[in-house]
Image (cartoon, rainbow, N blue to C red; front, side, top):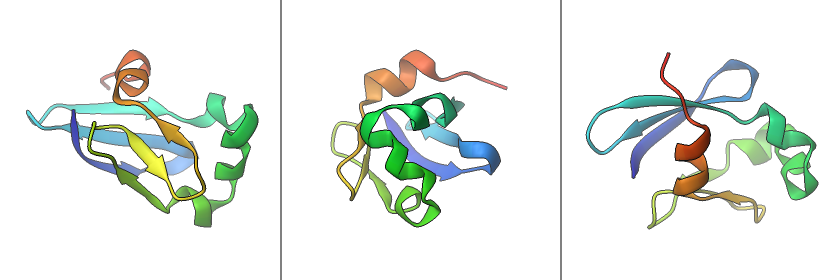
Length: 76
């Protein structure tokens, strides 16, 4: 589960787990898919929070589960 996140350049998300591990998630490939296209708007992109299950939810209705984030996350 993630405790914090921040957006870096080029739609990269830095995620910190509750145990302190830092992982990275490249959102860019998702931005061409369905509702994720909305997140090309930086105002909408930044309106995000961690949900109770550790995923990311945007107020525009787009979300990524913790399982999806973990499946695609990597260490630098």
